[in-house]
Length: 266
Image (cartoon, rainbow, N blue to C red; front, top):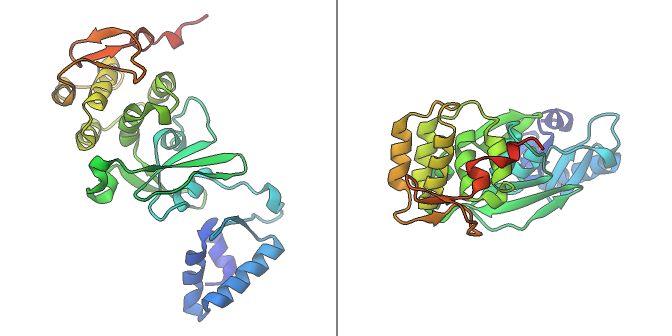
């Protein structure tokens, strides 16, 4: 494959991908490296970090080239999956727009910054590491000329309630999730069960119960989540914020979440 053809279908690519694409033409790794160097000098591509490159659109200054954050997050490790608030933002369901992007990965990685964007790796939870397909709930979608791996909306719902700090806290989470018109609730319950967290089960159950009319939540889903909920009362917030006990979920929920006080007009 010629470089120009490769660049048309790979707006963001790794060194390995470029070498493999050139191999059928008989190009060695050294030849491909020399070619990459020439394209860098010509401003046809820019180095995002070692071994990772972005294509510069024609008539665009390399220094002002915009790199799609979701494509970039997907390329930061071989198994990276856009997750948490970043997944909601990818689907256009974020109340606040962030330049901080979390992604799931099996291995250990360091946070990475590129221009005004910060990418934060999150090791896959222990409870789902042994499961195939990252524990399910991961899809690949065409986006901005490339492919993004991201969690589904259903998994994102569970994940942000499991780790609210990775989504900006409960007000942001509520506002984001309330932008979603439909969830596959079977998939939601299945992911809760896979995670194995009683507190997360209770949080998800409470959210769905609070939105049962809007999301058409049948009682069987709430019953399934209730069985996974804590046996003893737990605080909704890790800071142990005072609130009212919701006996169905054994969950002490702050008034601001119960009443969604952020919706009040001042």
